[in-house]
Length: 205
Image (tube, rainbow, N blue to C red; front, side, top):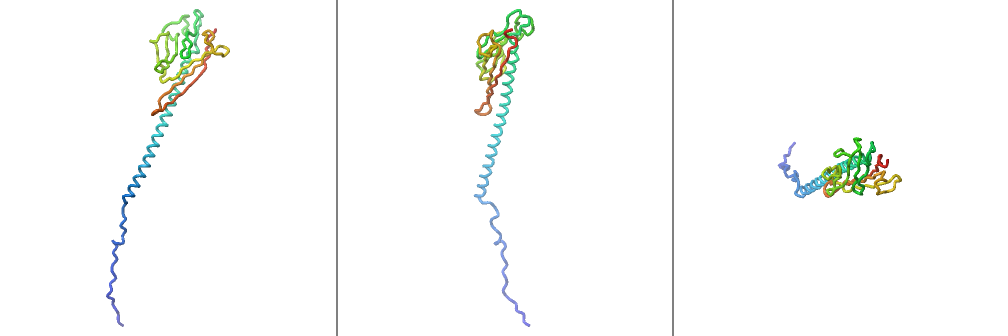
């Protein structure tokens, strides 16, 4: 039995030629990925800025609200006692009652007279620097700033029939309106207005 040997040798395959030559990123792909990353970063920065502005606005709003209420409470506490005169020796009451200023007396220590530097002659007004001022004894040198950034301070006066009046002896109730406006970021402001009515317990007695 004869065995035939073939002289034909099967050529070896070149694996290096078969291997893909696309092992990296093209310039176009890199530019596109970079553009997407920049867009994502810009969106994140914009979101952070918006959140920071909202946070700042909320803090300022809370602060303005608290300050305005405090100013109203201070004036209410003192105006309610206007005309206090336990001994009935000298007449005491409201000395000035204009739209933007109120001045009144109260004998807090029961001496029968109005004494200086004893918070017995008090005025509240708005100065040119947008400050709520408490003045003692009618002396501008005693001015004390209570609140800044005040844009409006208005007083209204009513008699016992709840009708507006400008007669000092007829005033029984004082209505106070206070507006505070503070900056809250770039070109933004927060404004709050509070109003209340104060019944003067000692006037007209």
